[in-house]
Length: 611
Image 1: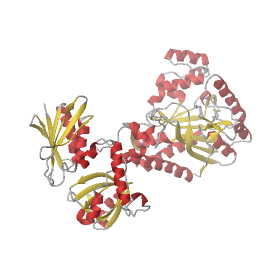
Image 2: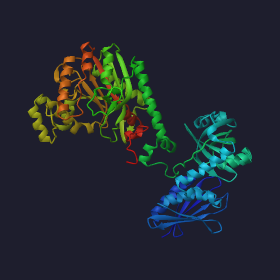
Image 3: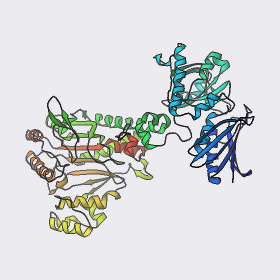
Image 4: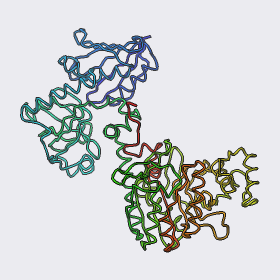
């Protein structure tokens, strides 16, 4: 069985394809642009014929009718391009039909072009780089080194021209950006220029820019950064474009961009080469623009409430403020080990002691722990502290802060995250940990408050594993929550009143000392915020630090260290204080519907490629 699809270019510049199997027509597409026609042709042929594809590209302008054959060749796919005369113009192999067809497509309408022009498309990346370097050297030798240009004269961006077409039609503009696509029609060419806000088409014709400039223009490559001066117009198909009058190469791209059919889809490459990812995938750049807006909205919201932004040390002599394994480094001058901070909490509360009643810090924390779609060793967090309030006040701030960010970035309080509708408009549910565990496991821990033996027995009955040194009522309550409740908290929910065992920096509830005034915010089964009525009793604080040290001595390397200076600060007196921490990366994931934390970090932690 032989498959064939014919791509035809219509007079209006659009394309369509018709599929044949053994020379019998089996289907015809509606009209698509050239890329869509090729994509659909490849898909149709793959579906209907695995062994052989013959394609004819009909070119109304050039009338060359180049033909090519793509056929299976062991584990590879062999392709052969024939000139109009029937002579073989190019042969090679590819990993699959799509790649072979892409190579042929890149030759475009110039199947009878010079051998070098055709050969370049099948060269390795390094070979293509050398050809581009030779082009650069030729420019430099002629005194037109693009890398000597220090200033471009850009007057408009792509989106501005499209939005203001009625005012700009027929007027001169200067655009600048990267060449992303190129449609060669001999002495006239269409190129798509990508700038920070999108893409716009430029029409470049020899009669308008002159023969010498056009000759140089034909040496440009996809990926080059250029400047185009011309007037704004619409093509016959209605596309807003710039008709070039003057052109200038601003920067030479020495490496070819990824092929256009598939773009850059390999996630490992995307994360390692974020610069290339943003070139090829505009949505990625938009994610990081939104990230910036989210952080700005948080700053503005807190500043308007009278909070002061501060900076505290990243290099610490004690790893405190959270239960986490730290990164350890060494200070050569002081000849001492230090820790990258795991949280900003203890320094910020010192500032509350010092009289700064409302403070916050947005910054990097570092935890030497596992990596998954929600965890990266370095991450961004906001911590804020307000004197003379409690954890209920922090709930109000957390809820309003997230709503404000959603309005700024999503223009809606009803969003979708990983296919699930999330309602940020309705009041967030507030539920105690004990009530949540009862609701989802059926076990009511109120019935045996502080009864360790009863808790252990029920844990064994329910199949809950008890970690070494964590066999208390409070530890087991927390384990039940993690096992039975967390994954069910889809809509925004504040889980309140954590056991004291897992809350070493939190004030106890006056009416129930085994619990603390603490909450965590959960959405889609994940934790987005953590807040306390801060512990300000220095004697109680020291006692809890000592309990944490016993866990550390028993092998728990995530347990808190004793910070004697922080206890000293509390001894001078800290007012009743509410504190809140929110993971910025996870919030950005939520508001941009990103599956992995790596999708919202410009340069996520990656193992070197040679290891």
